[in-house]
Image 1 (tube, rainbow, N blue to C red):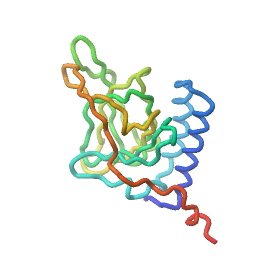
Image 2 (image 1 turned 180 degrees about the horizontal axis):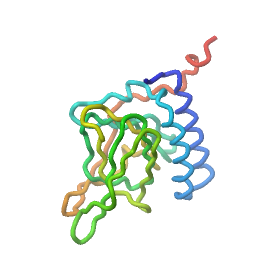
Image 3 (image 1 turned 180 degrees about the vertical axis):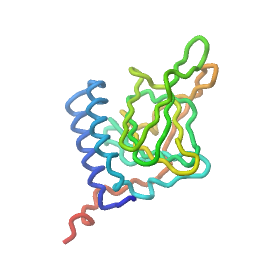
Image 4 (image 1 turned 30 degrees about the vertical axis):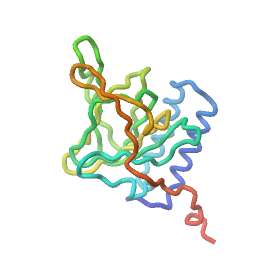
Length: 200
């Protein structure tokens, strides 16, 4: 499915998103136009290198694909093994989730005097679908692989270096447990070896 020679799709997305952030700091515009850009990226499943689509039997993987040099945004591939799910968690920054392969379920939550409770219907993301999150529009959710028998992959874009952001997971009583997610990989995809795309 994945083909390293189509990394130009990811490069173009990075360039267009950086240009968007140069043009505006308005979150609503970033989420709307950024969602369109991410939808274009995940409408093709031929660019993500296999190394960044590998599941782990123990837990979902969060592979860093790119971090903006000014840490204005980061792009990660989330790889969900069969039946894997996150705890209920927040992000503290804007985010866009684009489904690349398989499907995932997203359930929003709110915290009130009663504690933690689900809000609204569970959203099912299929390939090409994009969902937005942020503290402004709703930031607490739980995500799971919609499949119990195969891997799913989604591409997430956040308005910060998300692996370094102090965030929280939530207990049933609404209490917070701080965490910093980090990343599953120590090496990044080489987006800049254009010799493979432009042979002599």
